[in-house]
Image (cartoon, rainbow, N blue to C red):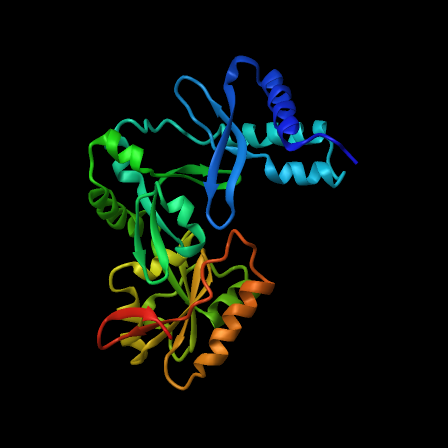
Length: 300
């Protein structure tokens, strides 16, 4: 069993990684508040023109304490992540709003669970969720990279929070278009990997369950806020919609008629507790889209 404290561990890893990096970049410890998780500590790599995603140390420290990784292995893995992430173009100048503007986007997170993070975030409350603004930075081997927009950013830009929210709402459906697939189509696509075409919304037939997400399938739950999406689906089904938060990445939608809402609510809670990771959890609530009123609300 290793006996370094987290403070000692952070400094030890920082020094070892900096020694390997040399003058390629300056490395500093950085604390960030992450959705559903709280404050995490990581290594932030930066040089004169580029800034790379923070590589968090909390998980590595757990591996270290469990004696499943030593510091040499951790440094090697961090270096691998750094090399991968160097391939992403992180040349956005956060001081220049004209560069940032077309990259503004939003994600959905749980409001109550993330109150601390929301204190300095740009967000709008929707249902029991928060539509929070990020900057889409780029894509690397480990996924899609974003940076949260804070109140300090908007003050520096001289742009109102409402304008930033408005721009994110305009950009997001274009940057990350929505997809709506029936559960049958999803299962079939798993069985038949040759299926690459997503079905059109008007070809969903008699399906009763659908998955709404984005084309990149990351933080796609926000797609339910896209203009006309739920309205068009409800019109095709000639029914109200029950919307279930499968995760921050997708929503499951079923026809609103002939359902036992208590069974649905219990199913959502069970999946959240037994299947989802803390990072992916969005809400235990179930939502109702009323096609007559054209509005979505928490189903009480």
